[in-house]
Amino acid sequence: MTEAETEEKDSQEDYDRTIAGAKDKRTTDSKTLTSKAAEKADLESDLQAAKDDSASTAKALMATDKYLSQLHAECDWLTHTVADFDARKEARSGEIDALGKAKAVLSGADYSLL
Image (tube, rainbow, N blue to C red; front, top):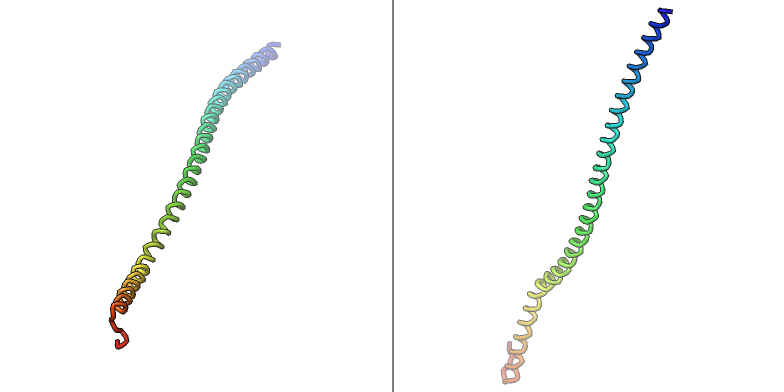
C-alpha cells in the first residue's frame, strides 16, 4: 500500500511537472504565434507598399519613355533640317549666281565666248 501510494505520489508529481511544462510551452507558443502574426502583417504591409511603389514607378517610367520618344522625334527633325541646310545653302547660292548671270545676259553681256 505504501509502495503504491509513493508510486502514485511520484506519478502525480511527474504529471504536475508535465502539465506545468505543457502550460509554459503553450504560453510561449501563443506569444510566438502572436509575434509571428504581427510580423507577418508588417511584412504584408511592406509588400503592398512595395507593389504600389513599383506600379507608380512603372507608370512614371512609361511617361518618361513617351516624353523621350517625343523629344527624339523633334531632334530627328532638327538633325534632318541641319543636315539639309548646307545642301539648301549651296542650291540657293547656285540660284543666285544663275540669276546674276541671267540678269547680265539680259543687260547685254555675252557669255558665249567663255
